[in-house]
Length: 319
Length: 133
Image 1 (cartoon, helix red, strand yellow):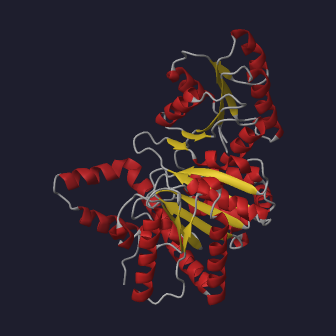
Image 2 (image 1 turned 180 degrees about the vertical axis):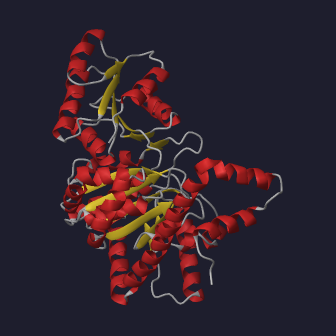
Image 3 (image 1 turned 45 degrees about the horizontal axis):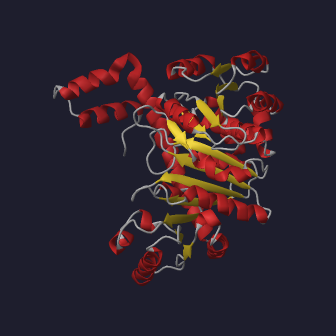
């Protein structure tokens, strides 16, 4: 049965793609079997990340970019992430509302994902979902993050091109000089450019870009694109900038470098996650973890001792 | 395996623009721990079913206050079946005359919740009627 799903995904069946993403999210064993089979068919899609604070227009821009790609005959997969409640685990996923014009287009597959407590701007299995869409033959996969603060930068480790969306009115020039989100842009997008303060923001971001150019040796200087996403204004400039960045990455060999780095990091993360999953399950047997916690609380043991003990049980000592 | 979440599409089929109820229920489902995809106003049955397909929804909740339920609700069920999504639970709510309910249920809508239904009843019904995938 799993092999049927593999064939269907490679043929682009939305039903199979959709179900496998659910299995990934639920950490269903079937997902792993399947991902092993489809992995060799990934790496063909170009991955575009769109990030920015809540309400900056990420979904509307995603919709516009998708529209432009479709007009060029390109197929598009979208994974849009929204936050889960830390209290109830529930989520209100609202990104689809901005994308209804694509809902009956077979060339577009859009999936909403809740973070389920995962930090960094994405959900834990967003990368997996991107791979499924990639293997299903989509030319572009767009990853839209949750509304981020300053430090949720995981998207740059998933996307080939990262767009950081800004809007006027969120801070002065110092904000745009800080580390974190402002550093990860391959392209800056200033959306809601019809709002007051847009010109000032534009010059502040340009100021940062120029500073960067004189501090670091950078072959790619991030362009600053001005858009009014609800009116579709600036979409074509954005598409051009994305294409230019892609050409730069491909011709400089940076794309391979980026993807190699990503593969390394992803593999390490997957090992980390799997080891942790196994060890946590075993520690839960006979409530062993609970008795450890009690001993730590009573100052009989420190967590450092416990870590040594537990890791020592499963792994040979490091040389 | 991680805990499974119930994924529900909340949709307003047709041209009816009254979505206070649908928005409130979206919040209530999220508070109940479900993952809720709110699709917004003016959805065709085709759009709703495509959303259910791409989101791999367990449940589709339809809200109508303008009297279009007799056409739209069964149409959604029919299209779900055509897309091999017969397992998706379909429930409806809004202003639905009592005499329409038997026909809607015959057409495959699992339950209709009228005005004043306690939200607990709705959440419990969904929890006990979703099917495994």
